[in-house]
Length: 153
Image 1 (cartoon, helix red, strand yellow):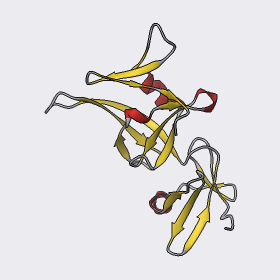
Image 2: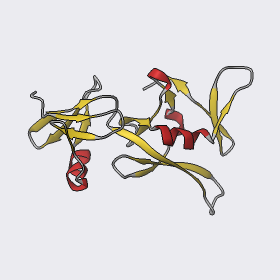
Image 3: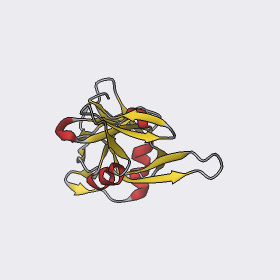
């Protein structure tokens, strides 16, 4: 596979040959065509063409966190906004701490890892509690305790 000169930095910003890619309509097509192989390598696949990406960390970055309370069944939930401008329910069972103490989760039906930006981490931190006897952290939501694990993805 030849390189297609697309790089994605750790903040989820796309570059083509060093120039910032900012046109949403182009990025939307790339996000829709995004794949990841069994080795964790990202590529864009369109028809018979496959373009490998140079990804510094993850393609998806959590840009914002929103806590919500459902009026109908009184269940709380946490939603996340990703760098592709999509909004999805945070899969609390996939939270983990990776290299350099960066927080991650799985997104897009657990197909891709996503890195929390600094701002989104601080937003989520409002929900995080620490186990007193152990050095572990969790989120308690709807009477369920979700542990934040280390290096799971």
